[in-house]
Amino acid sequence: MSPVPSTSQLRVAVVGAGPAGIYAADILSKADVDASIDLFERLPAPYGLVRYGVAPDHPRIKGIILALYKVLQRGDIRLLGNVDYGTDLTAADLREHYDAVIFSTGAIRDADLNIPGADLPGSYGAADFVSWYDGHPDVSRTWPLEATEVAVLGAGNVALDVARILAKHPEDLMVTEIPENVEEGLRANPVTDVHLFGRRGPAQAKFTPLELRELGQVPDVDVVVYPEDFDFDEGSEQAIRASNQTKQVVKTLTDWTLRDPAEMTASRRVHLHFLHSPAEVLGTDRVTGLRTERTELAGDGSVRGTGRFEDFEVQAVYRAVGYFGSPLPGVPYDAVAGVIPNDGGRIIGDDGRAVPGMYATGWIKRGPIGLIGSTKSDAAETIRNLLEEFADGRRTASERDPDAILRKLEADGVPFTTWHGWELLDTYERALGEQAGRDRVKVVSREEMTQISRADREHAEQPSGS
Image (cartoon, rainbow, N blue to C red; front, top):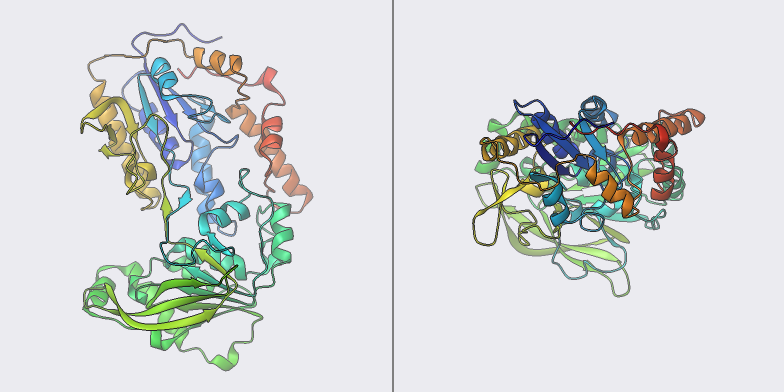
């Protein structure tokens, strides 16, 4: 039974159970304030892009899940999954039940690439492909892997992940948690050559050194680089001197230029092209090629076009030019930047003023930049401002009973899940993995995820959030 609700208790809803939302909830739970925290997630599983946006062959990056698990496993933060903000709950619902709301919905769709042919069949957003190979329940179970030659546009880790997964032989992914439908799709993949294009030079590439080196260690895949794509201006030299990470990336790429072509006998190749700006996706009914404009460094690390174009024969194009945030009903939105307008996490309304009790954190706050460390400091800033607003003891929610939101969801027929339900699903996925000789095999059907998560609701722990 839930304790008697406190009128002084700060009631906070966090919308989005990825790292940003969990960190914000964790920081708030450790603050010197009596707070009741509910963490809402539209999927039956928590962890956001750590579960659905990190390549399956990077288990050490996914190790962050262990830290997130320890936060939620404590029980002082209530997880309510399979609840879609804007459909199952509105902004008005949250304002009725909570004093403050923190939106941490991330950035999950592809940024636009405004070049001719970008919408041709065979041209795909990298975010959709990542969701497919990570077993996201909201994407199709199949993916059209039909091209022998593929272009990947972008020079960041997502582009590198897409290129590596496309080129990697499926048997080398069987130690990961890829679902059966992904394994089946990759086994039919006929690709021989993956071309990755970066608009600027090697010193401006946004790869992390470890991920880049790993590309060179993929079995039966050769990495091909082109000396004519290597140029360094004063801006490049400054970047190399200023960042050890940039220095390592440039060294790895430069070392690859020294490889003997006669030793490259792998059945698949990843070609890294720099100083190539995508100009047009070629084709009439579907993708048949990619046209790039040669660029040159301008002296400060930026580039300018040269007016020289090259055509590459490819049958598919993957656009990995960045993620973009989505608007949320009842929440201000900057359609140009793809973020919620805010000042230190305080959401700013159309009148330029902070909206009382409404906050943002993570990529929907600052845009899709920064790693885990940035996400933690970002969450800390948001929580500091939230606590400042409510330091006077003012409480605004008209409904103070922590279990009232559960009754509303049940009355509306929302099949919400709990932390106990996630543990059931987690156990099930690990059992599937054990049967397959792996650590885990993901469940990819939302219906199956929900059914498993709710299979033992009579014993489900539903803490009050106090």
